[in-house]
Length: 168
Image (tube, rainbow, N blue to C red):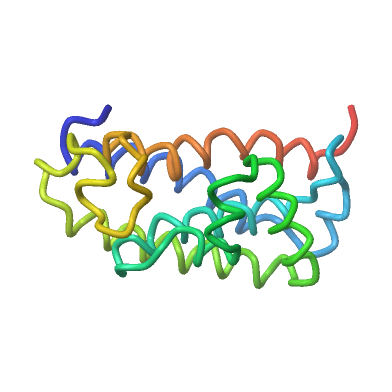
C-alpha cells in the first residue's frame, strides 16, 4: 500500500504516462482487432474510463453503481465479468477517440480527488472515508485507488499493445 498521497500519486503518474503515450499513438483504424474475449482497444479504454469513474464518483458524493450505469441490485449480485459485459455492450458504439477522451477526463477528475485526500485517509477503509461507498468495502483507500488506476492501467496496457501489434 502506498504510504502517502505523494507516493500514490507517483505510482499512478508512472502507469498513466505509459498508458497515455500509447493512447496518443493509437489511430482509429488500428483497434479493429479483438482479443480472445472479443474486446477491442476501445473496449479496454472504455472499461477503464467507466470503472475509474466509479471511483471518482465517490469523491463527488455518488454511488459506484450509478457511475457504472447499472442498478444497485446488479452491482451487488453480478460478477465483475457480468458487469463488464453489460458496460461493453452498452458502450459499444462510441468511437475510440471518444473513449480516450472519457478516460483522460475521468483520470483528471480522479487525480483531483486523490489530491484532496489527507494522507491519514489512505489507511482507512473505503466505507469509512466515502459515505456512499458499499458498506462492505473494507479495502484501504490507498489500495482501492491504486487497484483502479495504476494497477489497472499496467494490467490492460500489454493487452492493448498486443491488439495493436497484431498476431506474431
